[in-house]
Length: 463
Image (cartoon, rainbow, N blue to C red; front, top):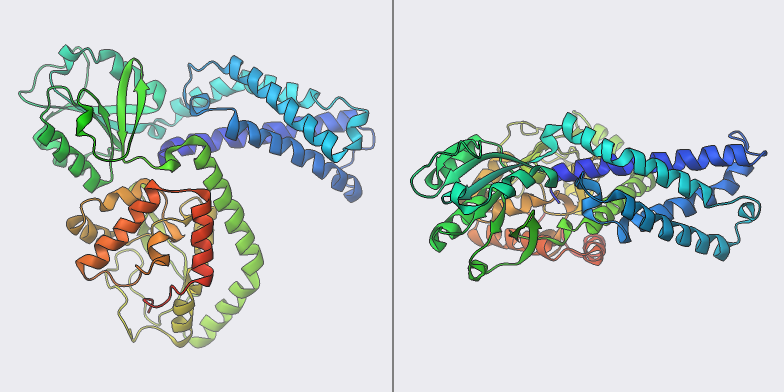
């Protein structure tokens, strides 16, 4: 799931969360005479009820609904709402009986679920259309590559792209350029212009209609797309071309192959990782707040300057963001345009800075980046812009790591590939581990990496 679709998803889930809790609060307010916002004892008794309903809602999202419910305006919402209602009632009923919630002995607990489901049914489709209409940049900007497109009966394919969250920005032709008035596409020229188009236009994904295009050209196009971190989907005719992990799908009546797949492209797994990131980061900030304060005081006592250093880093889809760190140097590189990397025995590192770097405590403020949605707890480490350009020149698949959010720690780091990236081995091994993580993600792998970060010996290459 790309970052733009994720933004739509977050907005819709936030709306549902607010709607559910608003309906539940109003229902209990009118149903229970003793309801009071000022009585702590009563609110404490109501907390388990709210928790049960929210867990029921989360169960529906993860196990009953699919991606189309949130992204396809033509989806059958009525059928899905009825199925969700059935399972929602069953889930809440089970927990009410299991935990013997006494308030429900005299109130019909299914009413809030019916009210919520009805309001959700009325509003969901219109809210989705509103978000897409008001925020055209939420569509994934897509480039189509093909040969004699008008004669390949793909007109229906191009018309279906919008409903799946894609915005077709243009077309590249294999061979002699032909008129495309019928399709009304912005023709960028021949496929030899592919690199120039990616340099000059914001493109998130590329569809390649492989029919009549030589295998050698397709492989070259995929390699160029990988070097820019642009996702590729093939409209197939020759499946033998696929040597990497892929997944099939459909758009309209046409099959496509999605290359460079990650488990995090899965709707449910995206939600699980996002929820874990937010909850873990929030708890860490609360629990470690005294340590934050102590470190801040030590930094101020050790040397002049601010507590935090906020260099510009590259994140998901190549977007830039300010990465929060505790300051560890007396003289910092320019946060926006700095290019000077840390070296061993760097004279700029302060006394407290050396300790913070060795123990990785200088990275703790990045939990605020996680709460802001710019980073994940686990993922490829974010690089500065000049380092990204250096990697792109020497490691062809480097930009594939930008498919997901960067992390505070990652698979490469816990396996010893952190610190300097001077040699080809250091660069290739770091990217190799990052890509392995992207293609093999699981919730338990994240837990394992957290455990290895805390208890493993990962500071040997830190300086």
